[in-house]
Amino acid sequence: MNIVNVKKFPIRDCVVQTWNYVNVNKKVFVFFSFVNFLLLSLGFKFLGGMGSIWFVFWCMVYYWFTCAFFRFYFDRKPFFFSGKVFDSLVPSTKILFLTLALATLLAYLPFLPLFLGLPVDVLEEYTFNFIQQYVDENKVYDIGMQVVLLFMTPLIFYRPMFAWISSVIGRSGSLRNAWRKTKGNYWRFWLVALVCNLMAIMISALDFLLGNSGWLELGLGAILIMFGNVYMAKSFDFFFLEVDSE
Image 1: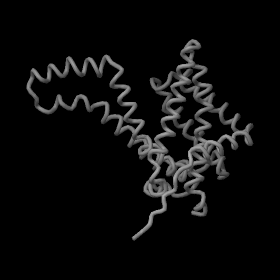
Image 2: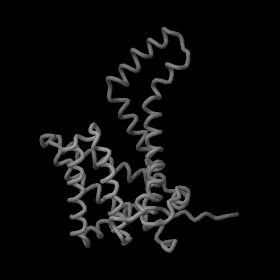
Image 3: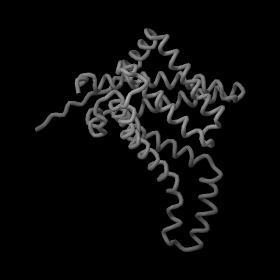
Image 4: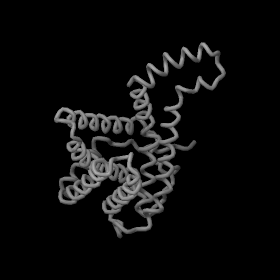
């Protein structure tokens, strides 16, 4: 009988380690947070966000910046100009595919009955009552989608992110390996995702109360994202540090 060693992720200890890292490396954290703020401002204020064709190029720059941060944290030189960035596109593409596939499935799920060959009167009732009331003109369905995505986050984002970080720093980008080393921690990862979402909602609400200019949301969001990156790095340390020679 094989005994599987399951490592329980210490959420509180990881927060403390992240906070200590930020305190010890204040200048580094401020630098990356400031650059992050500039990039977010460029993408969502000056380029117009996802509605602009230039946003694709912005995503490439922002991706490179994120890779550079993790290479800096793990002291993998060169920090900014490394071919490992291209290696990381494999796991990152898988993460993106999983996320988009799930989001697309959830978005089109309410329209599935329209293709099942139901009677016309039933389809009309369904179309004008359910779809129009709860999908097109109501926030209930949007909230429901967000809740489902939240519960799927540990599976389609949090754990696969470890494979991405691993590939960025020049190690194996195997999703299977990341899944194996982090199993047994679904609810712990879910709790982390929940807290991050609540903090993002609070920042958005605060920005709204202060005039909804978006600048406060970008500023605090830039700091929160960098704190989250350090937290992910510390989480990676917990699960993968003992095999750093891989």
